[in-house]
Image (tube, rainbow, N blue to C red; front, side, top):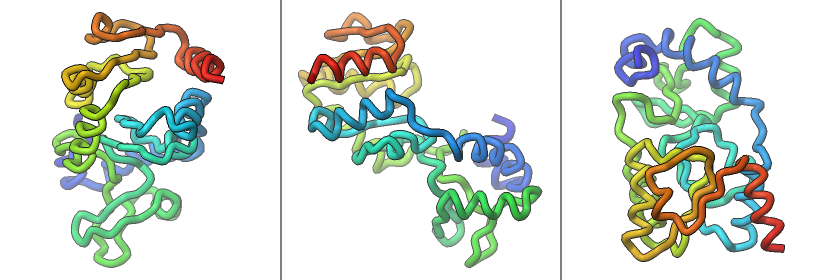
Length: 202
């Protein structure tokens, strides 16, 4: 909260990036795991219409998912709050490597760039939330993977599906508020469970 807050970014972008750049570097070389790949395969088969994620790590897209709603944004790019300029992750990392003690800057107006993710103190993007809500309302089946379904407003999306007459499947370890409402709850390892789902659909 002290550093990853929009006020902290505006007050001291150099300090913010000294903290945040470590996360960028750690995520840069991360690869999708078999669970990401299984979800992308289900989409390729026409069984999943879209992925709604709170993750900012861009791994669903890297796995091949096409319709991804990133409700907390993505590290894929950084933006200039002054002119709206957008900079891809690779370019931002080059800036950080060249001047690690400074925030990366917009080349047009020299303002500090902000990761295109939702920081504490910011609202979630309206377009992404609207798209997520619409998908939930239209879903015949919502599959919730690897989530405790505790963080709102995304945690309310399964209720939207249920209220619209859709069904719910949970693929996650540990309890969720929707365990009693789900048609099925798979609580083994997420990778193993999704692999088994794919095998059953062969």
